[in-house]
Image (cartoon, rainbow, N blue to C red; front, side, top):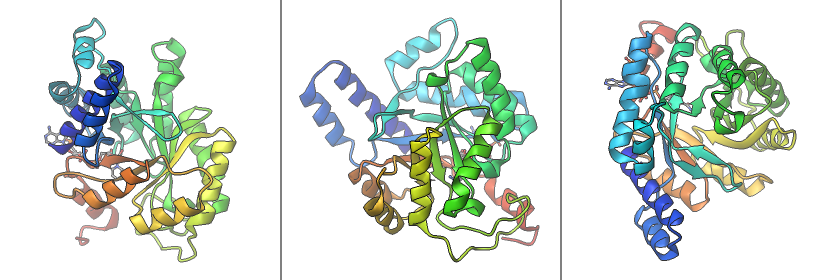
Length: 309
Ligand SMILES: NC(=O)c1ccc[n+]([C@@H]2O[C@H](COP(=O)([O-])OP(=O)(O)OC[C@H]3O[C@@H](n4cnc5c(N)ncnc54)[C@H](OP(=O)(O)O)[C@@H]3O)[C@@H](O)[C@H]2O)c1
């Protein structure tokens, strides 16, 4: 599967860099084509801890071990059984682990157990969003781990997203502050604009059909995103579900360039042109729904009514 190949290539690059062989590093990077910084988000839509163990953490960790690094394999056999996940470096120097735990559709009741299991397995990159309505449950587990000293804040990579209903300049700070409060953190590692299209603010924004906000202005939203970096609330900022035309426009006006684009990427929907476009701009690409999100259709039916297709 493509994400595994990419991870292997990334590891080869990292090994070449570590051995200090610049020619080998260059050759390795060149052979990786356009996609050496794709991140694989795994599922956490498990309904119980045993499912979390099966799908959410250990299975994926084992899959990755087949293809990733000797370093990771050695760590897995160590007493704590944790996997060291390779990283990709952003243009601003911050590093993001290539494998992340996705938390879409994970209710607050389920996500705590899944996250605890994932952290024990070695996950450090956690992906959530305002609209997943699980940031507070995630925050509780993170606090426990941080307070107990089992993990340091600088070892975690926490991603959350501005909801479409906050896609206006004056809402960015408000939504990020709410996310930080729920996550019990002072900053997130990456704050993403969740979608290019804005919607009107509604109570219970995650539920029901959304009403498009035709006044959405990407440039002013991006300037408000930059202000979050200045204020120390986000280390890096990026986009999700934006196309190349929209990204180009933002990059042209940006003082702080997007560090990452999170998009659907899997064998059914490979988006090679968009990944190459981002690669050329030094914008890393994160693959969501890497397994094709088989539960998404049911989620849409539940959200929009059984008749919706
Ligand atoms: N930025 C965005 O707009 C956006 C959109 C969607 C997702 N995301 C992020 O990306 C993450 C991953 O995407 P996703 O959860 O939608 O999709 P996904 O990872 O492609 O698919 C998850 C589904 O795969 C199933 N699954 C996992 N391992 C399996 C196995 N070994 N055999 C059979 N089925 C298996 C899971 O079933 P079980 O439920 O039974 O475990 C779950 O239904 C999300 O959690 C979220 O953090 C971002």
